[in-house]
Image 1 (cartoon, rainbow, N blue to C red):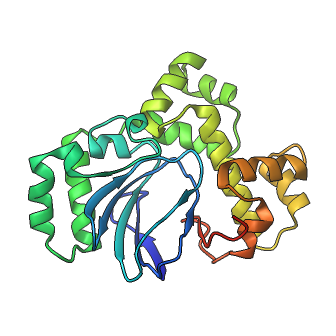
Image 2 (tube, rainbow, N blue to C red):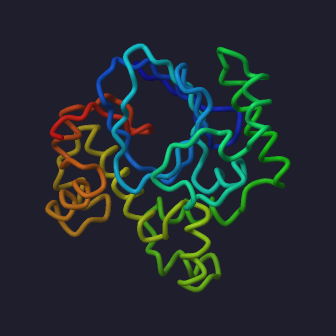
Length: 241
């Protein structure tokens, strides 16, 4: 059982989940999540390069705040590439402050409480790096890495370095991930895969299939067979694995 809704923090999404015990495939998205688990407490999920298969126990309850691409480092206080492909306890990052947050949130944290924690951290950091939102928006709209670098006034190396810190990987990888998500969302509405490939910016359907398989671990048809109507979250039963 999975539900999500917009958070009070601009661009962020609150989600809740009750695990049925079976693995769930979570597609990469360039985001960092602040999480609470009924078994493990407060955690952080870093940006994934490929799909992550969850291993939650049956009945485990989750509450998550998915931060927009580029915002997580300001909230968590570490560059995104230090958390790439990792799930770590919050106290590994914040030390005693994480214990204080856990005590304040209590045994059943609310979405409002989790959002307030992130908002306070973001304000203390002076807000997110504005470059993150600009780069993510350009790449999400289909701009090339070269065009994106020119638009934000950075050279290729500087853009790569800043992107690693903001998103956990370089702009080319982020562009691939965002393009894959556009394609999966389109395919989930019933658009034929050949048309999806053209509209999402792939050379052809074979290119789409290769890219989705590399990033999601299964071809588009494998994702669609487990389609759950949750394109924003990108969570699917592990069909075709």
